[in-house]
Length: 232
Image 1 (tube, rainbow, N blue to C red):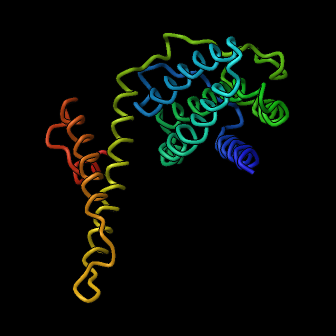
Image 2 (image 1 turned 90 degrees about the vertical axis):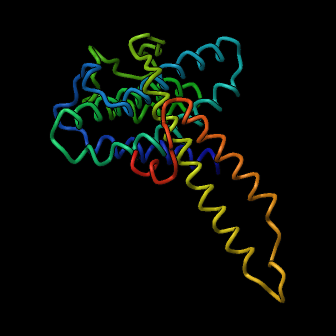
Image 3 (image 1 turned 180 degrees about the vertical axis):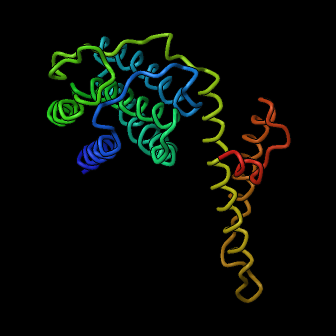
């Protein structure tokens, strides 16, 4: 069931991307046109290529599969695609950069995933052909060039920026959970809380303070949940 859900996730993400592609396809954009979100996912895909290739060379099949699953489901689908959706309704350079990044990362992910899911990746790859921003793309994913790590797509600063937002998002969710637990513990029944959660509240607060302390060390002075929400 998990593999079926993963295949559906990839299929739906690919269909969404192709629905937004212009008939003429997309062209490569320069780095100065890319946003931090674009650079982040391109950099993550670039590093993923290196790690997965190393794993496969060492016959670490399971480790490579885990990395691909986490990247495609969590970082590409749940984060990047959701972040760029508003940009796809415009007609400026930001939209072009988003479309280029979407197809670039999708193609890379499909090639890396092909040894595990040959039929699904082949179908998506061939359907995506008219929109690919590559010179002389292969007719089949089976004979296409294997992705290679490139310093051109190494954007450490943008990675740090987006990953900080991800951490703060986690803190926001934990803060809401803490408020819920405090409220629940205050619901008295005969003078006693319905359940004791002091230890859990303290643990969550410690995690939240740790992340905000890390944010301050990176230059996000006085960061808090309110400030975080303005960054999104």
